[in-house]
Length: 113
Length: 109
Image (cartoon, rainbow over all chains, first blue to last red; front, side, top):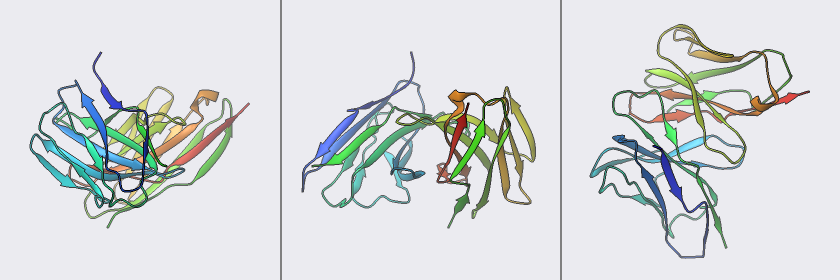
């Protein structure tokens, strides 16, 4: 079955540590996205990529980094510069043919130890 | 900048009809989407309006008025499983959606 896989489901970060969240899709979608969701809040855009080897900052990119070396993969690194990383992180993708529908992964809950 | 406003909570009873409004202020506009998210789950796509008018998909309908920068999601014949958060999202043309803060719908028996 086609879809988006995020791993791990739960992740804990220590002070000063970088952690990487995985996002893989087999939908053959060109565009991929990372959103952050805080409790009771909406989704805020961190980074997005329209094509391999290219990505753009979203609204809250500080303290985060991404790479897009393969079409299927868009990992997000939460660096030690992100002082408030506890949140639910959602990866999404969409076909390049239309901007109407995002497909989301099941999310990663990141907590600080 | 962009902003989307929607009510934080709505309560309704099973079998009833509920409308969730969304007003937006954006620098560009290509369309308005709606997503449903159950607690702890991933958002799932419900509908998309690029043009004025009503789009119907089963029990759910979505409406857009571009001149009023306003849209709504209409849920009919409410069921308990419809209890979830509903987000409107705007496509401003930068190829990424901007989401509202969400409306938590509570369906009561």
